[in-house]
Image 1: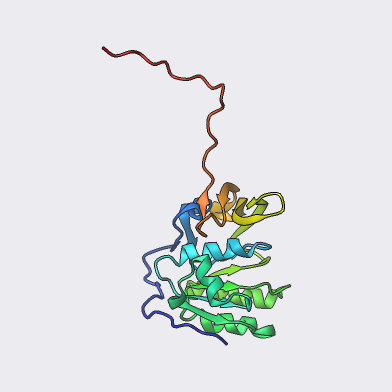
Image 2: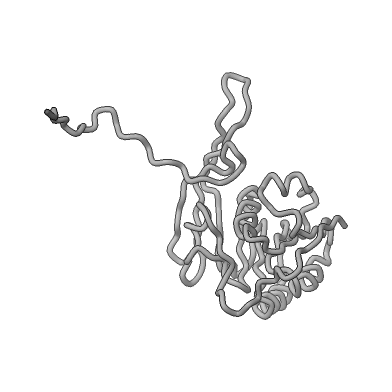
Length: 221
């Protein structure tokens, strides 16, 4: 098991904030721009989206853990924007991933969970109660029954490769968020994920059409 130190005092369970703030472009997809404490968020099929969400939520040095993501090494986590000084890895928990979640939830407010397949009703009930008591947010790289929020990449395209050569510079995605309660109404955003610098940015509005009316200029003097 590869580990990195968790900064003391980063539990963030102060009873004053309803959730973990998510600044930047991804925050526009969330009700009130926060991940509600004790909730589960599902982002199946797109690991970069899950990592970007975790990085944005951990921007204020929130402690986090990655469970069942053995391909997420330190370099990949750092490239995604995660603070290595606040992270913990449980690479291969196998069938004992619920026990890993139970142990971590007592001290880690943000947990990233790899694909775990079907979740039994008993396990789901137990972990749902645990998350609510601890206030931990669970970000799942796969489906999760009863997830408060579901994020999905509806379309994606890379830029930077020319006629058989070149470097991938940025990926344009259309992300849709939907869920329960305040998240029932779907929200959609066009994002660079990642952008040229590796971070997430909104896609700029298109330039005015060439035949758009131009303001008249008046001579002065």
